[in-house]
Image 1 (tube, helix red, strand yellow):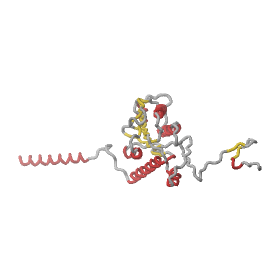
Image 2 (cartoon, rainbow, N blue to C red):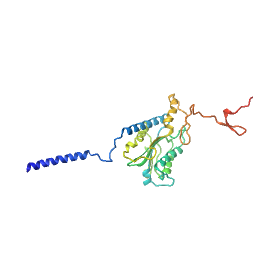
Image 3 (cartoon, one colour):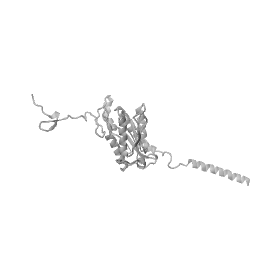
Image 4 (cartoon, rainbow, N blue to C red):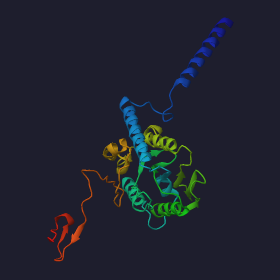
Length: 286
């Protein structure tokens, strides 16, 4: 009896050890990043390269990406103050479009007449919920420009600012009371390296939030001023060491003056009231 009891207890302890090993090796659903497919890895790598090229082109054009904005729509809907004029009642894609449109329309003037320069990424995370990250060029050599940006975010989100600091004094210079929006400054000495890291963080949003629901609308984007078409138009002049002349319109769409897109002569008013280009007006013979 003793020998049988000893054998049974030994067998039981071995079974317990095997069960514990299986329990430790069993994957827990919902925890840890899921392995990406080859297509997803190629997509993230290509997007990272596009964002890297856009940042490099922005710095060559003297448009440093000095401001980062994070807006959590879930936090604003759940805990925001909901002041009049907010856009929280719009759809997910519509309010993100409205946010970028207003940032482009209300940006402060700059000495080099810069267009709207930005890149952005949208996703749904476990902590922030539905949110958007933006990296953009916002002239910030005066305190009132950061105050203007904060006031603009207050109007669009319906949540007032908890504090607004002078530019480049802290990493985070403005934040809402509910934590729904935040403004960060690129204060590193190597500003371009910091902008590249932030761009890489935005480009890899879907990999950081595995299993998140599908985002309605476009999830990632680059403004036209630093997009692929703008880079191709300016490549010849940048290789020659000349910065192309940029004529941005009201919404930040850049237009480079080249042979194909050269400014036409200004119209001149004739005495009869007809408006013709100055090259077509016949001069009287002397």
